[in-house]
Length: 203
Image (cartoon, rainbow, N blue to C red):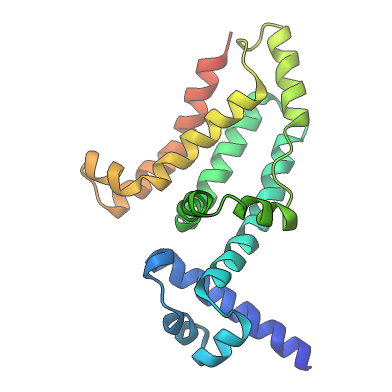
């Protein structure tokens, strides 16, 4: 029973932290707010996670461990390159719209601590591009797709998906919209990015 109670408490903390980080971001969140949201005292929170940084990494790892296998499955299924691009873009953007603080945190951590990604990849498999690259090479050889490497295409997909989330304050100001308007733009972008990429690589 004790172990079950401890597991439940930890899950409560992670859910509470996710909610607070969602609202306030990494820098704006406070450990006391997270403790209050979890319904525990601050001493108990520090017993499980002795710093906000460690707690954030736990929230990130938990979320990424749900996303990475799903996106890897898309990259390695038997669908066409076009369907892979559509499904990957739709699901990655859907995830980031729900967790906008995560890509910003990754950029911040990679600049501050280059070893961060090694720590994450030790617990969660990163994307496997082997099948994607081989499939793309075949479609290029057949003349279905313009010459492009799998690595470059994948970077293009990531860049077009991630940049608007990371630069959301800038984009919101440039297009003169509010948070709701930005979210609507991102909903449309789930298909716009895929269409743009597919049209650019079709032979």
